[in-house]
Length: 423
Ligand SMILES: *Cc1c(COP(=O)(O)O)cnc(C)c1O
Image 1 (cartoon, rainbow, N blue to C red):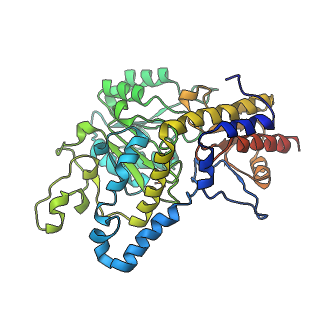
Image 2: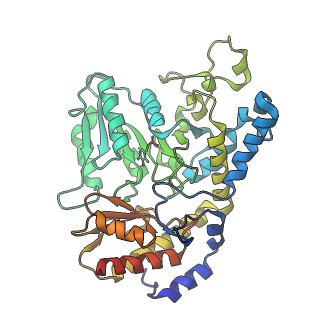
Image 3: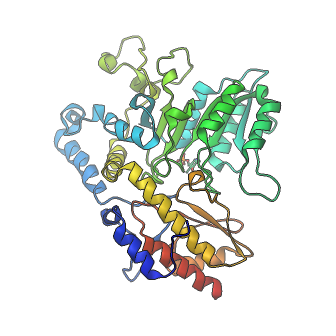
């Protein structure tokens, strides 16, 4: 993308031409001690709060105050059905059919519930394949599943590693692992977008490779949901999970989304953990009936969900709907491409972007490696008003989010980085 230009005027021009620029105003932007807006590039860790979120939560507090238990049926948004208000837009954001998606529980909990159904080890085929730099929680979760089924958690775990001296995982290596060990692997569980490198994996390709060898394939899309076009249905994955507090802007520790492919929607023979919310909605409150499984992803719910957290998700998915997900992806590619252009224009031999340069193999995040840097660099950036994310040993992760970051944010960040590096 060589049609980017240097200088502050170009950033201003891009903002002026940006049809989504006004969305920044719909978010609370954190400020420094003097009341100046910070440059917030940490949406990969905790997304910012839409200004409408308070109203959505207040509505439910009001109904609870005024109606008590009747809010389940008489509330403006009856709590009994509340999760259904999220399904359609959430399905759009992750590229799935409504029957494949439900919001429930928290992320690592959902990963375990999915493995209860989809990790079916036998003495012959029990191994789990993950990417080498998987998010720690995912690694701990799959290791504990191995132990839970009586297997060794080191021997049973196969890592898809980047090659010596490289940062990104290579599909040929995945192919050769599956070629040589595929018949030992029960589950392939990959982070859809790697949290460290920002590499957006080809989900369909991985699902095909795994399925060809008879493995179940699932994805943790915590860094993908709301950030890239996941196309979960078309990927053919068996299941996927994601959180809603990163790019989905639904608040700290908020609930998780869960995808179960349509082909499993009516499969009652799949083992699963159930509760009253997995039971037929029509007869749920007769209480004494035999268990009657709901079809689709909803059939994996256990509990009646926390409405206040769901209200925040509802506010957030409505912002996505208003912006249009395709528009967001389009801006995201332009914004991150501009960021990459400015970083490369620094011509600093100590700086290397480890995130793929192909816009289709990444989301908005760039992981910037700074040779010989330590946490001090990150602290200086923070003091200069840039909120980014430091990963040992030497990587700054920055995620310009198309909903609330501007081209000027990106320009200012790189200027500040330049200053800090020269100190
Ligand atoms: C953020 C993140 C988590 C965090 O899990 P929680 O259960 O929400 O605490 C797990 N896995 C991945 C890949 C993540 O990005």
